[in-house]
Amino acid sequence: MTPPDDFDPPIGVPQELEPGLRRIVAPNPSPMTYRGTNTYMLGAHSLAVIDPGPQSDTHLDAILSAVQPHQTVTHIVVTHAHLDHAPLAKDLSRATGAPVYGFGGATAGRSPIMQELAASGAIGGGEGVDTHFVPDHIVKDGEQLCADIWALDVLHTPGHIGNHLCLGWGTRCFTADHVMGWASSLVSPPDGDLTDFMASCRKLQSKQWSVFYPGHGAPIDTPNARLEWLVAHRLSRETDILSALAAGPATAAELAKHIYTDTPPALLGAATRNVLAHLIDLAGKSIVRPSGALSMSVTFSLISEQDRKT
Image (cartoon, rainbow, N blue to C red; front, side, top):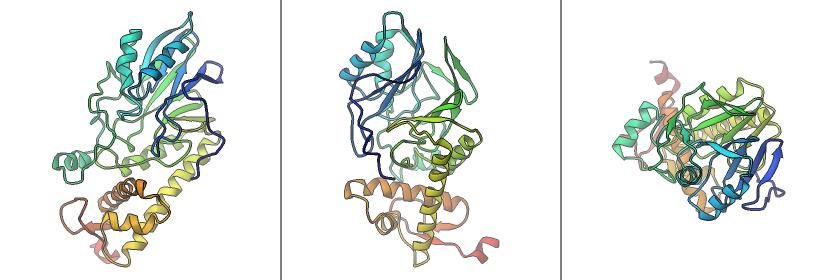
């Protein structure tokens, strides 16, 4: 998906998106973060700060300056333990006295297969993870966080990373990096799990939303259509992988080079991680098999339909 050219907000400046909701974009633009991380400030008197962002004194000052005299930060909610979302939570908590809420530390919510792969160390991973993140309060799926004019429904949505949360606010949803406003999400094992990612998409699809407020990029005004696109995009990548494997066994890197022909070299590594996520998912469904223990260099081949039935 091509990023919208008209999304170019001023960095560090609070912008009202609707009554009671402001966004401040952090000063961390990059090929993986687009214009920067969206920090949201929700509330009239008691404020929730959603995703304080990267370690940045400048961004911390911007958040604190946006707190008006009649307002108090009461909740700091971190959607997931990545370096562009979580690290500033500790400093913001120290400055405001507000506790930090999250699903858990960097390894919380991992599926059993990803726990095994992480323990083996065979497939790498750990890109951009804030391994030091520990929330003051661990929240669970289905829990609700409340203050004066707002209530946030906690939705555990693993996939991008195991401890990823989305936050429902009535018919609106803060989707962090699960559904972004400019690109599809990176799923990099063992932190990311494509099987979980697709299940989380189906979870979000079970409700009719009016708008998504993502962790990067502009608000998404057609959220359910965007979810349909995201699922179709992943299924299309799966088809591409299976078509390539029909020509013979290949590694994740070989498949990524074959499929992501328009991807800049700087992003080909991320594309390879995405392909690996698909291959692990397909192996779990007995559609492909690795030639040996899972690793970055192992080759994958198709399992014939006859072998799948036996």
